[in-house]
Image (tube, rainbow, N blue to C red; front, side):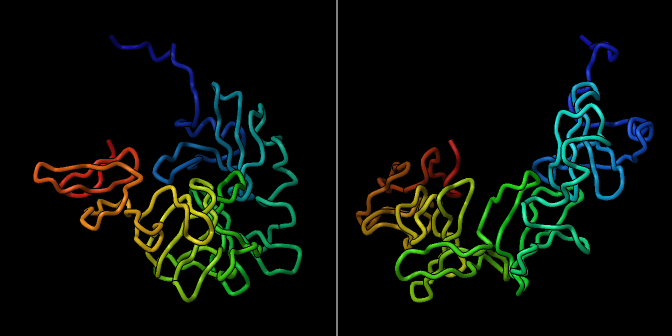
Length: 260
């Protein structure tokens, strides 16, 4: 049965450019979360983008890509959008980016509709990932206390990308803060080694490479358990008797570990 369109109520986003024009703005797109999940929004200039909700009565607004007000009836008078321009205290908007005022040289990019933004040190190396809400997702642009044998430095992921965390130049293990898999995500020689680990690459929630495994513990990447290691994830045993170790909630198929 078809639903009468007049009975529908707007929940989030905008399709009609007139909604924006009537309020002095222009139509654009904004990704509150993942980049491929953009919604219609209104651009009011000066890097202020607002998204309506609840039948256009509650607006969420972003200044320079960072959340500055929610649940506002008037997008042009919303939260701290008239005074806030950067995700963190101690930063000011200057020349298209947010710059630290403490002379550290740290700066963060701004956005017009992408999910993650990044912060950099004076050498131009990526040190943090950050959300539109200002929450740090990965890394740390300020020095952290690292375990013995590790020092604060750049953890390389691939092609020069990465974040700052704790590195051991001898073992080639590097770990940085992860908001999603705390305390840290770890890499070995540029390859993901484990997540939910301590900053020395031990006690990982999920292990991808032997270098982040405890002695005698299997990596959880479809590892064939022929060496007698212990699987702390999900074991899949085939008809021929071969057993494979995957992360919790995954099983081993012919192509590798697949979510159950």
